[in-house]
Image 1 (tube, rainbow, N blue to C red):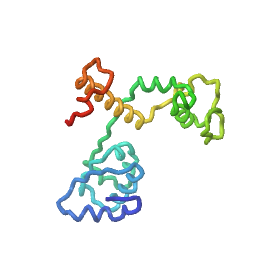
Image 2: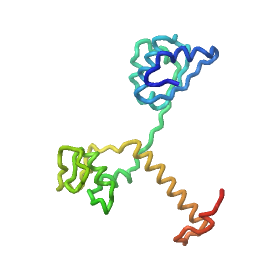
Image 3: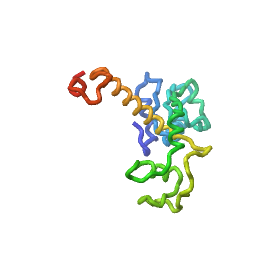
Image 4: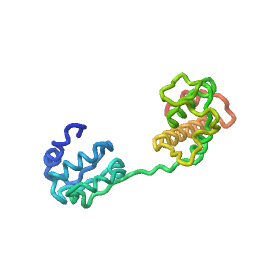
Length: 186
């Protein structure tokens, strides 16, 4: 286990199991470079084979470390989540709404745009958002956050699964949660 402050003992820990040669690397992105630098300074080329997670795969600057031969034969894995165009289109067409209509849109837009709306009680940015902009997120350089896409895909999957289970348990015409749906144990 490596923390933000103890990368210096990592190589010693890896050598305690003399027969271990494959190291699976799960790191937060800010820890990739310090860990690999420490290993590059101590490990011999070919001593270990590393299998890295997406934090390593997405930060190729680790390959620029002097003595990067310790990485020869290693590989990384990174999952690429395709952006859901329907979600992007929906977000690009959002308009600021009052808190009663939709409490999250205004705050989301303020965070993305770096300004505040006059009717917002959360005025954490110094600039006022332009009230005449009809679709403030419909800009060419808008990029959907990968984590937002992941959350959307996960939530959509849960809702579709729950809906299908409800239809199977209660019938396609049911508008309420039937006792079979509420009491099913498996």
